[in-house]
Image (cartoon, rainbow, N blue to C red):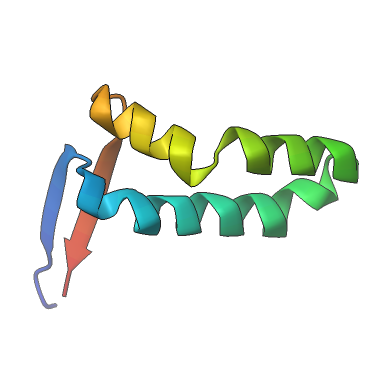
Length: 68
């Protein structure tokens, strides 16, 4: 079995687009199964790139990176 490099760290501004893409995709795919569209839209706005960058700057966001 091949060993993978795993790193858990604070997100940086360079990670913001990737974090936003993952969050937006998750909301778009999963939330409609459980919530009305108005709620899905609310969460998409709540987790905007602007708010994600703000959370990263306030060191509220961590990332788990797996390489390999």
